[in-house]
Length: 395
Ligand code: PLP
Image (cartoon, rainbow, N blue to C red; front, side, top):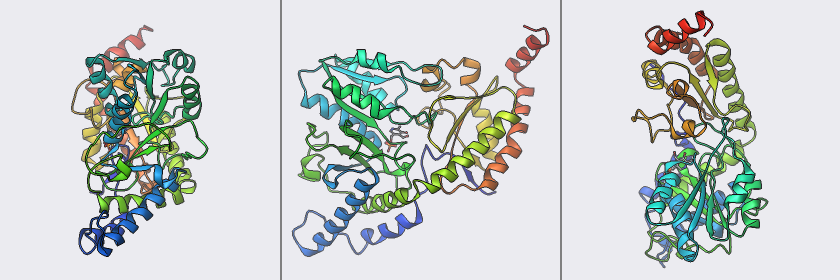
């Protein structure tokens, strides 16, 4: 059975080109980049070059790149580090659709006595910017709004949001974990963004490496306290091989940003059109909003997403229901709930997320099998049965 991997918002394949450049740093080039001798120095040079490549991907200066262990650490650092830098401010603004790396931090902050505003979204997953503007007060230390949603792919107007926040005098952080490598990010132009999180394993680098972009001049206390690494912004000996891998993956992502994303987007559109046209009672989540080129979230009414996933999995097709972090729980996704998607649709939602490695035959394979799977599950669904009866009597 061939694997058809359509779960790239959960994690991506590490690019073979990235693996190749990483390998020497596990064996021959094992020096510590902080060492004074030539052996550490040559590694330091490679880390510097990787930092430049990551910076280029997002139009930043190399000195603004802080390597972390993952997107979650970057998000936590942005929030806790800012709060520590502005101890007099006790308010944080975020949204109801953030990843748990921000959402759960918001819960912890509430318990610690901070005031937290979690902005709602509308049925299509969009934010009301007037509401955002009103929410930010002189007491607001940081506003954190994700660039693109990991479940629906909805892209928020981050430049506009950042402008509103800066006008009000707060620090602006965006979780760009799903956006980096999929849509252009340019910190040299998008000047109101103070802090930006990236995760390596979402853009074909390995798991366990992340980045926090910190705009020059931003006040930010370190979150991991230790040595002087990362200009004192993050203690701990650098994860050299992974940093090198992320450098190469960033270079590839930049090269592929236009052409490859256009190709990925065409494949996604084919899948989307095929599903919506071929399967009754399938609803597109995030419709009407700008979305990432690779993401498709569809609700199949009156059946369970988990059952669909299992049947797809038997055919080698990997997708997800809700985010990987919430699957395994029977609660529908907090993102779809925040959007007000009814219970009967939210439970049957599936996320397909593509990458450069997907081929058209794989999309055709899914389109060949999915309608039959949905039909089979509906045949044994009491909710579908009830819906059909109601429809028959015009109810
Ligand atoms: N933020 C978003 C939007 C994500 O999708 C993820 C991962 O799914 C994270 C943060 C966490 O990144 P990591 O897995 O590197 O900790």
